Amino acid sequence: MNPHDISRAFHMLGALIYFVGVIVIQVNISRMELKVKSIPKYLPFVGFLVVACYVLFLGFEISELISEAFKLLACFFEWMAFFSLMAWLVLHGYYTQVAK
Image (cartoon, rainbow, N blue to C red):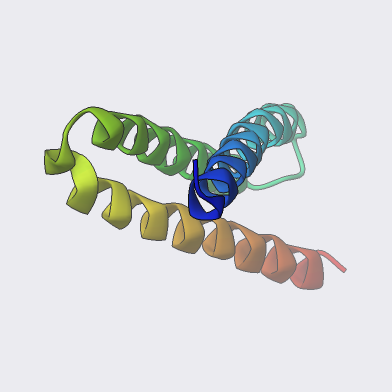
């Protein structure tokens, strides 16, 4: 095993922990936001959209290990996961400013 393989294994393990962690945290935050009457319902909806993008990315990333055919979809949903999370952050920042 060469050093590139070892660092790739650590990268894949760290990425898996990160993506699963985001899914767990985002589901819990969105569920809590749904219960709060004063929070607009578009915020938890966007949170669940983030979860969907992360789940799709993980699914296609794992499928890519089996077949190279999923590589393009995995790449697309990795970017969708990033942009959906950024949108979620911007919307929460906007809501925080408006709610003052």
